Every structure is written in C-alpha cells, then in structure tokens.
Length: 90
Image (cartoon, rainbow, N blue to C red):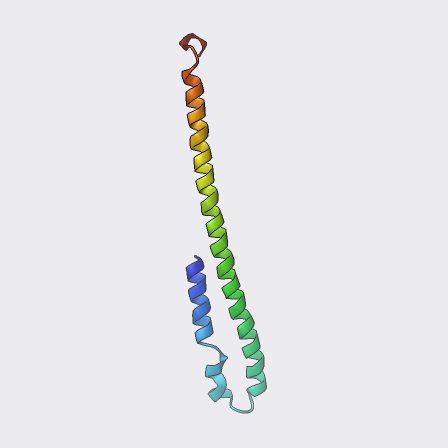
C-alpha cells in the first residue's frame, strides 16, 4: 500500500500547477502562487503518509513474526511438559 501511495504522490507532483500557467497568464500569477504552495504542502503530506504506512507495515510484520515464534515456543514447552506426565494423571 505504501508503494501505491508513493506512486500517487509522484503522479501528483508530476502534474503540478505549473501546467496551468499558460491558461491563467499574468492575471492568474497570484492565484498560481497560492495553488503552488498548497500543492507542495499536499505532495509533502502524501510522501510522509507513504513513509508512515511503510513503517506500520514493517512493524506489523515484525510483530507477526514475534507472535508466531512465541506461539511455537509455548506449544513446544506445553508438549514437553505433557510428555513428562504419567498417563494416569492426564
């Protein structure tokens, strides 16, 4: 998902407000200045979002591995303990 967000950010950055300059001409320069600032802030936010999503994905993967290892270890311990119990006590 982080890659898709980063790709969307790159696409947004590629089609910035500069392409509108010929349409607005000299009269729209002030408007384009404001739009450019807003566009840059939006692009920066999308890049930061992609980084956050990638970080969350890495943390979730690490947690899943840790849980799986803990579960396997606990299962082995329980199985080992059960093997030492006399059949009548079970």
